[in-house]
Length: 83
Image 1 (cartoon, rainbow, N blue to C red):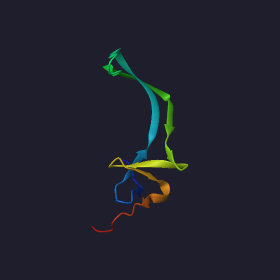
Image 2: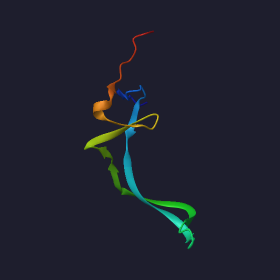
Image 3: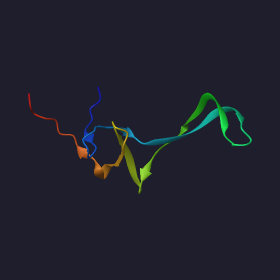
């Protein structure tokens, strides 16, 4: 079980960091007129290129709704004492 100790400003738990990773999507051909590829359906992911994303030099955190927030925007999670 994961303890979520911060929430987004709209109350959703922070579940991770925003990341980028290089990948190659396999194609079978390219349409010469539209220049659009015909995808084969597989992708090679290069995990050693994974990097955390930042905004204005601040690490980006992701809430359970998929929105991105910087740490200074996050709120500490306060557990209710109601039974």
